[in-house]
Length: 267
Image (cartoon, rainbow, N blue to C red; front, side, top):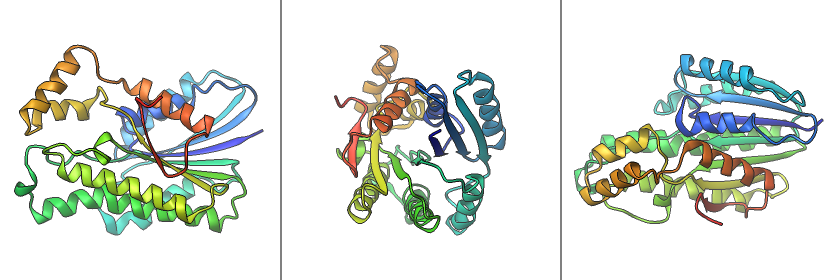
């Protein structure tokens, strides 16, 4: 029976929650073992999602295990090693056939200011949460695959954005952070053989969620703000469910180029 491990950061809600829900809705063609490790800040939200997943999982061909790792604050960079230790213990160190590490956690930063309005402290805080944590956890995952003698295949998935490859005003720190995360995945693809670990940066599209709501109310560029408000009113934003489903299909098809940037709207 094939066994999958999925470690998912930022699983409290939004896209992270939808990704977790999509995994247990896999079109299973035979018995599989799936272990989800949900990582986030809120213990209450993670425990609630765990209960929901177990209650709604109805395919008897899927052997489902759900673990939670709460109180993970990625801005506290001195605690990242400790956080990884807790995540690693939650994986149970079983011989999985495939291990997926989905780096979904992230923040918007202050969208009300142009680059000229940034402070050194605000820049440092943003980069700690969105870049330093991603690079540190990626390093830990790669060593984990090496040290455990993992014989299957590992997958590193960065939740990216169009902003990683196309600049827009007032998105300075966000764009820099997403571009840096994309480059981490691209570098992994150059350093690690594809039959050991494959990497992907996935841009989920303009999602209809709390972060998009914050964009519509706080973005300093009024033209963009108006565009997003119109998209919301006309129902043109992407649902978290649809984007999560597309990501899971990408991973299962396994046809993407390692290190590449793939957008929700790509064919």
